Length: 489
Ligand SMILES: Cc1ncc(C[n+]2csc(CCOP(=O)(O)OP(=O)(O)O)c2C)c(N)n1
Ligand SMILES: [Mg+2]
View (cartoon, rainbow, N blue to C red):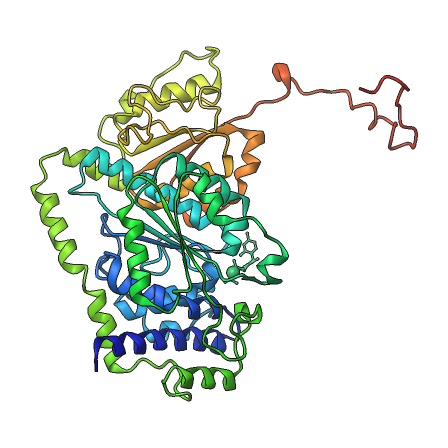
């Protein structure tokens, strides 16, 4: 069998699994996984550098499925390329305590880098991962850190406000190792995306400073997909957005391009018809023939050599190994406790001042620390002295200005932490931390090691107002609004 035929059979097998898993669980999402099976093949089979035998190899490429509902695609690829995810694990999709929950969960399934499900969190996490990679590359050298972060994002990801904040930050930071494929399928749950969105995503990202390519109708063309992704990788000073027109549920005759393809398992007859269209047996459940299994496993072994060469380079590296290890582990070097400041009992020290003294006292002893504030850096005591600003001119800097983007700050911090090599700190006022609450929740759920500097500002002067406002003291509530004519401004 030719390579081209084997490629098509493998893609057909992935599409089959994408239909079988939700059918068996009687819930789940096949449509996008089916449409993007050729893209997944291009990424896992040709482009990405990873080694399933060591899912935490620090210089691996990162993959983020921001539209986590399409998890069956990720699980199928993890299984086929040799991660510790078996065909039985795929059969257990969405079962209690299985390795294959409805949405991908980090620290649960090998090969899953971040937990996704709440749309746009993953895309923003990926921005943090790309920032962590830039930081490590600058500080420890490209011979140790030189990888990419790849993202698949859906219409919903791009609608959520968080993705706008994160994309703006990524453009400003010129994150050239970030490649996002936008699955422009024109379908969301309620119907066609034109029901709710008319903005021009490509123009929007171009305005953020991204390299944008509208690649059109190439969702079934593995060679063209590979070439598009590689053009994104070749762009090193801007993040890349590849706008891919795909057809949800393809090639199902009944459900292609329909909202029904999104999250309602196909009926068995439609599954059989669709499998026959792809030239695979209609009645075979979880069909992975030996030739496909062998082919995909061999593609999964492509990264073994790269990883062993990386191990050699690390062993031969003449830099500071203790600092590198402390960074990767997010742990302090010896002596950090002695470095901490002390204060006399009763001394009046503002919280932000004390926090900042502590932060700067340990900045050398905890080399993984990186971060700053959401435009309240000094106000929250999160300024890092003497280590420069992390920006496009100096990737070794350790102070990050997140801008007035609390939600992105929270999600970017999670991505940095889950990437590894970074212990992110971020500051804002308590009242504004509400804007980043979904990301704080994700940090708690996923054990992302992050540090928040939250300044509990009250009203001006720091006192609570004790008198209730007039309207609550019997005005509006009592049906007698106290508005003095002419006094309203
Ligand atoms: C923050 C958030 N809100 C709502 C949802 C529920 N939800 C899951 S997928 C989806 C939208 C589906 O459209 P799209 O993102 O284009 O994915 P596709 O159907 O094309 O796979 C929604 C609203 C969610 N996962 N996260
Ligand atoms: Mg969509």
